[in-house]
View (cartoon, rainbow over the protein chains, first blue to last red):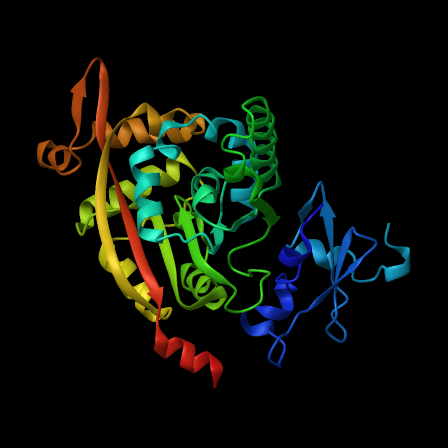
Amino acid sequence: MVSPDLLEILRCPYCVSGETRRPGADPGRLTLVKDQWLVCQEDGCNRKYPIRDDIPIMLIEEGDKYRATPVEQLS
Amino acid sequence: MSQLAQSIFGQRAAFYTTSSTHTDKVVLDRVIELAQPQPTSLVLDVATGTGHTAFALAPHVREVIATDVTREMLFEGGRLRLAAHRRAAADMGKDERGIANVEFRMADVHDLPFDDAMFDIVTCRRAAHHFTDIARALSEMQRVLKPHGRLVIDDRSVPEDSFVDATMNRLDVLHDRSHVREYRPGEWERLLQAAGFVVETIEPYTRHRPLSALTEKAEPEDAAEIEAMMAALNESQRAAMNIVDKDSETYMNHWFVMIAGTKSEESHRDASQ
């Protein structure tokens, strides 16, 4: 189990860093889905980061893999 | 970090947990001293490998988040953590705190998956010479640090000497193809200032290491090139590298640098505008 206050500081790496950073004070916020996925809340991002063995996989290329997968189909 | 680094560290994860250069206690102690940890500190240890630095800092702080780009390195770290948990339980809770407050995230230092200004301390040990864009990596570490937050970097380095710089960097690329560059202390100072840090400490140091440390894990053709480069050195070049033959082994200097700085006030003001 990943501790909730440490999940709270995680952001979508694509939307929070570098030249792809979204505008606003706090870009790239994530929502925890089914206790296993962190889904980016930015419009059109759709990146989804899996949590495996209590380790969130926060790599952009990992988030890219699930962009086309609807949230309800995540398992 | 490159796919090459991911693949090389995947193969080497088991080796790193027992490697003496990666568990050098004097160096770890200095990292902790420079980090000035407080019981309330939230620490980010980037490119943690199997978590040596994270575990060393953990007893001194509230929480350590350890990141690495390589799954195998993190899972090796997780394995160590579990083993330590079991030992701690058998030991009636002794040292338990120093292990339970380390959490792992798979993340790339060039795109850190954290909100701005979250961490009191960022550490990075023996990894920066693998980063494909050092300026961006430092800028990301700066972004996630709180104002006046502390950065401590320990890394391979080279002296301010063009011959040694070129030779050592070439030898280390041959040793490990995911090496990008080992920077001079002066380069580090400029890089840190450009990234918005106030530099407090730049401490170069050396370790006298056997040549086998370079050749052992290298590909056969790369090991052969290392041997050929060493054989071609003249006396003054050997002296510059501090090459000494002893106990039927060739020893040479490896250069390192220990760096500490703080996130500058100026950069904080810029970020808030």
